[in-house]
Length: 108
Image (cartoon, rainbow, N blue to C red):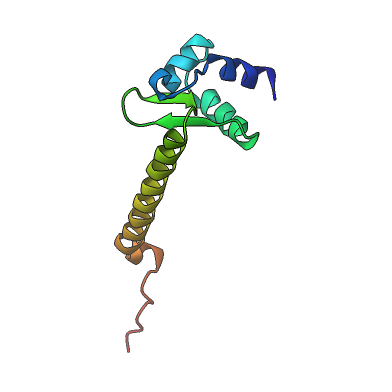
């Protein structure tokens, strides 16, 4: 775990009730944006730190406290994955002419 990751982890609290938005974490750690926060959290997850994010109030990152918090986060991610798959399908269909141009027809 890097020093920065330890700093990020030190800012997170236990339970959804104490979720903190990425932009606020970035501000506390004197960053210009939350990109570094997102990368650090991704790395911490790979290290098996139970850091979750919530899209309902309070929104933000927190350390998982209960099974229901983990399940809710997984359900949200699953729904997002399905929506992204549908959007990908729709983009492929809408852009089919650009992705697979028709063969040029020879004039005789």
